[in-house]
Length: 107
View 1: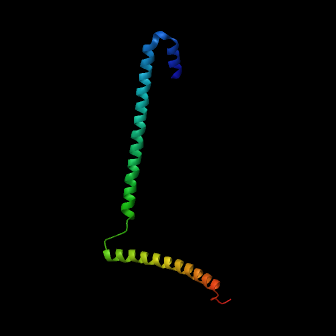
View 2: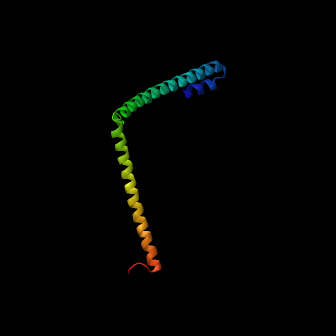
View 3: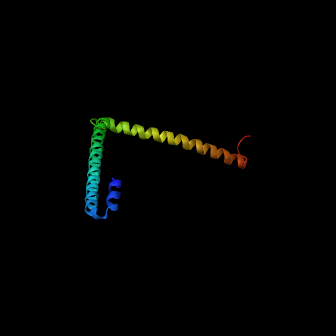
């Protein structure tokens, strides 16, 4: 298309054709851009609906509130136990190092 515009520029009498060509190219570009946005929007909208269905089926069951509460508390307790183990290991190592420096630990 730029070849057509160059040819129109070389012929100074055809400036009307140049403006017509530029307008047609601009409208075509906007139409193609609109179609691309429309297709992308539809694609992502269908993906979003698919994800909503996945979340609806994979959500934790809350029909029995006491079982749900027990399961969530069990998860919290397990995390706290793991955290306590890691902290006790750190304090044990730190305390041993302090005792050695002060002469309290057995050699």
